[in-house]
Image 1 (cartoon, rainbow, N blue to C red):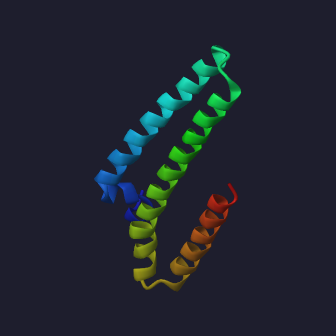
Image 2: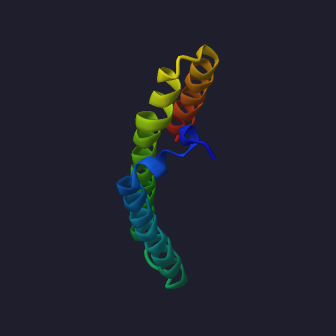
Length: 101
């Protein structure tokens, strides 16, 4: 994979943060499963579910920032108008997907 498509390779700190957050989220999801199995009160489950959603959005924000800092910046600085156009389209699609939630 080329450098333009491997932002986390440029930022090992971000990669560690993402991995740690996803591990915590995995634990939260397992906890949700236990809550359902234990027939816990629905509002308690929904509250925990909202927490998982927020944690996932946080990971998305971290990844988006890394993508913008490394991949997008690199494509725009490359001087290739076609690469810049593809990058604009990609960013627009990502923004659309992330705002639909």
